[in-house]
Amino acid sequence: MQARVTAHKNFTISTIDPRLYGSFLEHLGRAVYTGIYEPDHPTADENGMRRDVIDLVRELDTPICRYPGGNFVSAYNWEDGIGPQSERPTRLDLAWRTAESNQVGIHEFARWAEAANTEMMLAVNLGSRGLDAARNFVEYVNHPGGSYWSDLRRKNGQADPWNVKLWCLGNEMDGPWQVGHKSAAEYGHLANETAKAIRAFDDKLELVVCGSSHSDMPTFPQWEATVLDETYDQVDYISLHMYFMNYEKNTREYLALPEKLDRYIGTVSGVIDYIKAKKRSKKNVKISFDEWNVWYHEREADEKRMKEWDWPHAPVLLEDIYNFEDVLQVGCIINTFIRRSDVVSIACIAQLVNVIAPIMTAPGGAAWKQTIYHPFQLASRYGRGTALALDVDCATYNADIAANVPYLDITGVHDADAGTLTFFAINRHGEEPMTIDLALERFGEIRSVEHTLIKHDDLEAVNTKENPDNVSPVKQDGASVSGGKVSITVPAYSYSMIRVK
Ligand code: AHR
Image 1: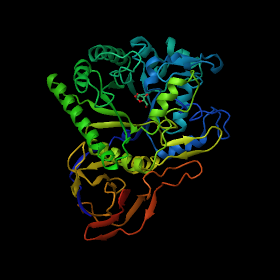
Image 2: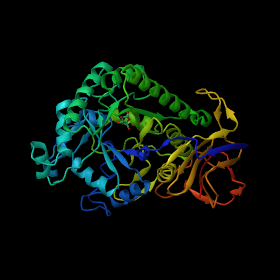
Image 3: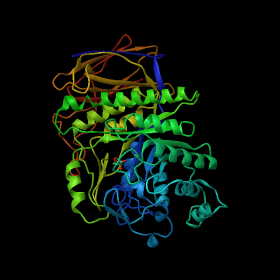
Image 4: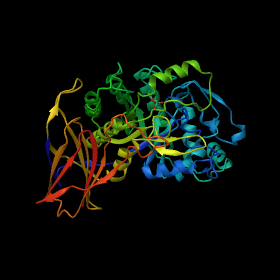
């Protein structure tokens, strides 16, 4: 199969906000306890944080990490996680029916984030609590001193404020499963008043209001319209979430799901424009796609586990083991965000460690990379710069979810400072290899081409503690260059990164 792609230096989509490669860590299952925090682990640092995990997060190069939830945040008292660890209360976490020891709170997470080279994106509880707890938390985290909450932070060992810029006004408030679930009008009002109080403290902070939990929610997209009508002047981003599933084991349909993601973003972009016009506003609200990933492998088993257990602390939960097929999916999802980077500024892979995550750990033992670590890491590291509006000519297929799904899913990113052009290409054809002819216009002379391939003959292949490199990127030879054109042949069902200098 043949695909022709043209990239022109002046045909651009947007500068990519590096926070497109954000992540998420929730107090859920083993994400925190035995994930990032394990004081008895051989690699633990002076804060009890696993250095082996910190190293893998640093390598992933994720510029922000959302915390502490997720559904967890909607019944969380942030004050439980401050002060001497021995005096912190154990609470029942209503979201996941587990016990929360509060041994990790904002101080521990902040120290971890610094070590992991990522910035905090914090969520406040607008489920069981509201404006008052939110404004106190912001004061505790960001005020230098001389007030009750900031002086308490200083007393607890942190003299300097953390100056967290990005704040989420609750989580998935449209979901009936959420503790303190609200109607769009109720939530919109509360979010607006909370945003005003936070802005009265510091009007430079960036605020994210909750959009829909997924695009099949019965309240979508009226939720976005109502909530933005209430909050447009006070917020900077509206959050969206989406998880990808392949229960039917139908790879063609599965790999077409990013078309649904694209429509979801397009619809919300339209709602933003509608409210902007209605308010005669000059301001642009953007999308924070702050939860996305493949999530289905362990879902049914987890639902059963949660019904049966008796409030355990840090149990195995949402530990999806990702396969090679999920590499292709994650590649297509990230490509969709790159193509929509004019409206999607922030996106967070959900989650980061153990819980539907690119990084896995064994308690007391090793940490390793799941298959999906690799497409995320390559995009996060090399997908910075300007997203290009490519002209793509290739064969398509019809899926239930969308017609004319191109077999080649490809994006291009130009980093003018580094003098690089990077393409992320997924061949969605299951039988045929594909020759990609890339015509590069106005980028100057081509000096070198690097091709990195992720391919496995078995779509179900996984990485394990014993075999952590089973699915991983491999450098290839074979790219040819002539007359400003690059030609590369990629195998059926494969992920490629092509870097041109
Ligand atoms: O990431 C797992 C859960 O998915 C989050 O807690 C929630 O926000 C979403 O439903």
